[in-house]
Length: 350
Image 1 (cartoon, rainbow, N blue to C red):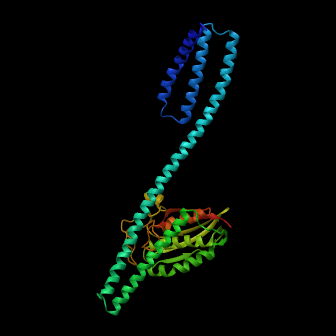
Image 2 (cartoon, helix red, strand yellow; image 1 turned 60 degrees about the vertical axis):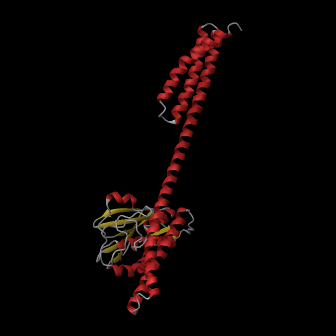
Image 3 (cartoon, rainbow, N blue to C red; image 1 turned 120 degrees about the vertical axis):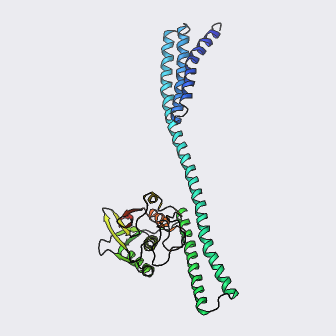
């Protein structure tokens, strides 16, 4: 026991000779990954223990045989400790990255929710103000001749339809975001689905002076849910019709690449700015500064790339298209081609 203070002193000196530089090195590596920090900490600890053993051995307190045993034990412990430290560090790094991504996603969702509320508030306030003004005019007898009264009644119906469409879009988008879509996948012939969509959109196209044509052949069958696919195609058609100039043409075509079927809707809107292409399917994104519907027969000053195609929506139509298509295992893209844009939906072939 008389040698105990000397042993402690030699061991402390050896450990400090390694621990102090190790602490400085860890300080310099503070911006590196969690894995590097944990691995460096364990390496410094093992090296400090090794330096303590060697310092005590040089002072002749440990026999050569005992020194070999200690070094072997330290080597095995070092290998196990460093391996576990490396594995734990990588796992902790992955967890930290995942948690950071979740926080960023939550911030993005919250920002998108606030933006959507602001957009919808604006789009609801506009028709509500018009409805109130027209209702008060009718109630107070400001307008009384039959022609004007009939016109006001027509406007009331139009504004009501706009609000109903917006509420319907919001409900559909909420189902998509909540993963609450009740999908029944089956073989869906694109020819029949597109024919019905074009027939429904024909009155709107005629009012805008736009022709809608479909390819004669090449129509595949896809695996999907027919109601949701019909909604997606209808949104794409309305969007294309609304932003195609008077006397323009919307072309619908389809085909198959191996096990993937595709459906394309091409318009002659004049194209989308390249900077806006990545944001086309964002909720409530609009490419035009004006928010009011355009007059029938006049092209819009700038394409409302995120609108629903009826001129009075909240910029939800294309976001709904993306959500419905992705929920069925597909994807939708947009590119500029020729004098307009080309939206392509890709789904598993049936």
